Length: 59
Image 1 (tube, rainbow, N blue to C red):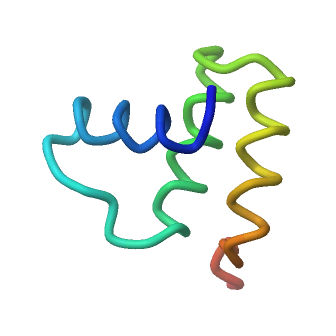
Image 2 (tube, rainbow, N blue to C red):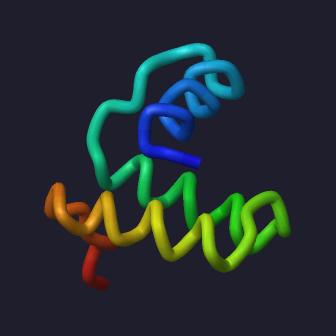
Image 3 (spheres, helix red, strand yellow):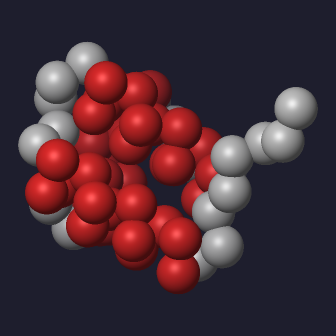
């Protein structure tokens, strides 16, 4: 799955555009944890989002 496919999937599920790449990172991680993405898809998408400076919030 490419980043464009991820964005389209996000739009279909949430009925809105993602507000930030960090939101897409959260979405990718959730989908991986629920078994909806393979490890390969997760790594590819994580790498693409990382290139766009997506980060998890620090607590």
